[in-house]
Length: 148
Image (tube, rainbow, N blue to C red; front, side, top):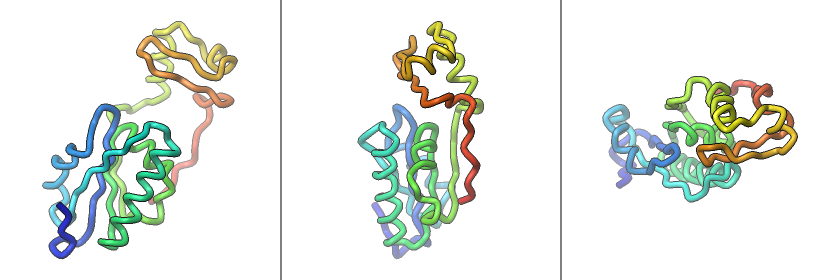
């Protein structure tokens, strides 16, 4: 329940794969002056999920003025691509993946898929059932860091 008279701002939690909005509860003690709410996004396509995140942040900003983002794993990835930089006071990213390139290469290796094969096919299904995509050479491309 949101009570914007009691708190100074809102904190939006964006869950990772297999998670849910209810996980926001664990962050409430860390942000006692904020209403902590979870977003239960309905898609796993970055540009669609990004729209849902943008809408949620925009609505919270309108109500509270200040919004903090807490995003976990793939939720952090979706949030980074949601175009919400200017709407946030601060962002916290929680990720069990320290080296995404190593993770992807490990999944490909376990499925006997080379970088060349991925590049040639554009997309392959790995042994874990995940779909890996290649647009050019994504394992070598790096996006510049952005400040929130």
